[in-house]
Amino acid sequence: MSVALFTLGGTISMAGTHRLTGDDLTAAMPGLRELGHPVEVQDIEKVPSANLTAAKLLEVVDAASKAVAAGAVGVVVTQGTDTLEESSFLADLVWPHPQPLVFTGAMRNPTLAGPDGPANLLAALRVACSPAARDLGALVVFKEEIHAARWVRKTHSTSTATFVSPNTGPIGHVVEDQVRVLTRPLRLDGVQGSAEPAELDNIRVALYTVTLDDDGLLLQGLADTHQGLVVAGYGVGHVPAALAPVLGELATRMPVVLTSRTGAGSIVRNTYNSPGSETDLLQRGLIDGGFLDPYKARVLLRLLLATDDDLAAGFAQYC
Image (cartoon, helix red, strand yellow):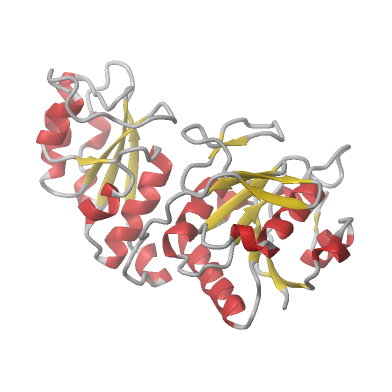
């Protein structure tokens, strides 16, 4: 049985003006023969991850599903790191298989001293081949750490140690040639409906970060152009008092999800009671985003809207 490798471009495949193929990447990687499974390569895109779309990623997940149906023990996807935390979470929400679906990339391209791509790819392939990684959903493997897609964040613009999971830490490590899973997160239900790429293209969800003295002027007219909104509030889910009625009115016209802009931790529900507090906003109809960061909350809301899934139940899994 093989392990599938899908390449989408990104820093891991950059070599000046030339883009490396999956075969190029594996040719530069030591230890391939020790995997015990041949690598079947499909080059899907050669683009920076800033140019990837959710619709394209659904097509990649569909191709990955076909690969495991044909007997692949697991799938690795290489892409740019800019959107990897969102791509992997989108995949996690719609990946129903026990086989690992592993995302990786690189921070240093192959023309630089000390490129990290070969080591990241080898570790990702090892995880994809490992029985220990089954039933964990989509994963991100970087710098020999294994992260659950639902919690991983890109936290540094240039460091090779950019990917961390602030709420949980990595769920495992690749040590020498061994995959060691230390904790197995609960497999959530994900999104129950089936979203077609074209349907997702038609769903616009805005992400609004609350800032000092924010009066919400930028939100005027949003309900005429978008189907949903994610609010990245202060701390545990607060906004200026003047912004609360604006968000409450929007929540009567579209789903509005409340998250924290801090990047770690959950919003709370009933600790504070002043205007603009989490209690006030939830009473005005905003949806509790729980532990999800704003970027992942946007991915989930968009997919739930595209599939007509229950919004409250979908977000309750992360609270």
